[in-house]
Image 1 (cartoon, helix red, strand yellow):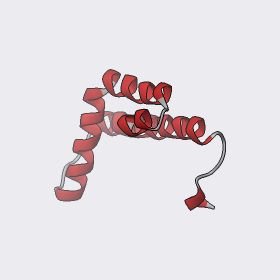
Image 2 (image 1 turned 90 degrees about the horizontal axis):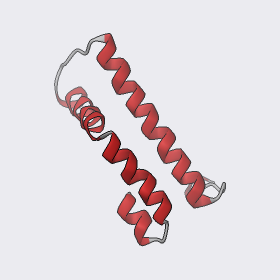
Image 3 (image 1 turned 180 degrees about the vertical axis):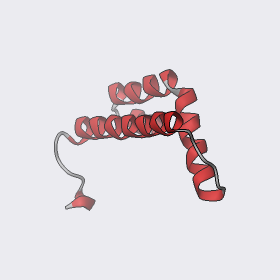
Length: 81
């Protein structure tokens, strides 16, 4: 995503994504692993683990929404109209 943003001239937005990934690399890996395990195996998480994974997912959604707002300037994508 950051590379695509950078290629389209959205340097600041790409840096926002890159900074988030750098700061949260371990948590993002855990989120990806949680998704994979949820799809392909049976695994139980403690309440604390589940809350952390949920918080990371919510953070990613907020981050992408913030970048989307900056890139689209408050306009919805044509596909969503």
